[in-house]
Amino acid sequence: MKTNKKKIINDPVFGFITIQSEFLYDLIEHPFLQRLRRIKQLGLSYIVFPGVNHTRFEHAIGAVHLMQSAIASLRMKDVEITEQEEEAVTCAILLHDIGHGPFSHALEHSLVEGISHEHISLMLMEELNRQFKGKLDRAIQIFKNEYPKKFLHQLVASQLDVDRLDYLRRDSFFSGVTEGTIGSDRIIKMLNVRNDGLVVEYKGIYSIEKFLISRRLMYWQVYLHKTVLSAENMLVNVLRRAKELMMNGEELFATPALAVFLKHHITLDCFLKQSFAEKKNLLELFVELDDNDLISAMKQWQYHEDNILAYLAGAVINRKLFRIKIKNSTFPAQRIQRMEEEIMSRWGVSRDKLDYFLIRGSITNNAYAAGSDKINILMKNGKVKEINEASDINLSSLSQTVRKYFVCYPKELDIK
Image (cartoon, rainbow, N blue to C red; front, side, top):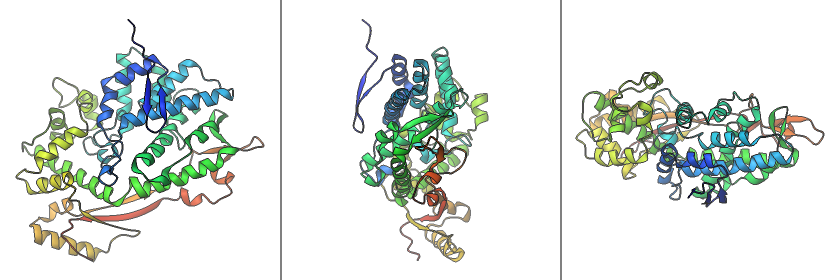
């Protein structure tokens, strides 16, 4: 008996989502995709927003739904998209985040060095293409922006792609931050194509303005929330300390896959040469990693004899987080020096280990980058204008990069 692969998924954000392609369902069932169920969409944000426990898998399915809606809307406006192209672009959006590691963006460059999750996504897509005997050729072309119809790539990756339309609405829903709510249905209905580029019909301009403002607010209120920022920087330091110990020959509790990434500096060259791998290659080891590897490891590391690792791991696991201060300008050198002296005195920390307890950095936010990848509006007279030019409100401030500076330190310190 043949299995019906055209499944219906009940999604809390969009309701019933139909998986229209049997090949798409085969991809969803693949272990590479199922792994995304074990990776939280927003890293450690659940530490602040208790409802934020949704995963990369849910986001991928939501993006598939919006892509199918966008294709249907464009076809109604006589934009030519073949069934093969529809399946390819939908596969591309399904797989666009497949290369994320544990806790998503929080550990983007901690386990692997100098490799973005997009690059790993592409490597995994190429491996899937090998397994499915070339069925992803067109999807990979679209993902890499090498397909003749450039607007298909814009649906996958641009400043107004279905990826953003899903994650803003989904993250707003689960966090309870209503300022992030956007009219994704309205935006999709207003999409069109001119000169092989994605445009939004003028009637949808207010929805785009709301989309850009919502994105800005979500970054400050959720993605760059100060407590989340503290937790994620501490998590990075936990991994850094564990890696330092293991590379110096110290044995730590870790799953076999995690141990490989902690014992070595893993770069793109390592993936290409398959260094350090024995029975499995690095890509196979990478897809064995998820949030659970880190959680189980930190539960053990909090009892380790190394004081730095134990302190940081226990703090993340038990939400005993560093205090964080954020300013629009850099912190005075005298203030930083007082913190350093207090830390060295209170914990007996040497100067070369100070940055485990005193974390400094900066964050940036710009809701819209007015560059080559523009959001274009189709005016009533048929002309195409960039959103800043078409809008009757001043959106230029959203294009400006806002930079803020932060410092994290143990709450036991009370330095003004």
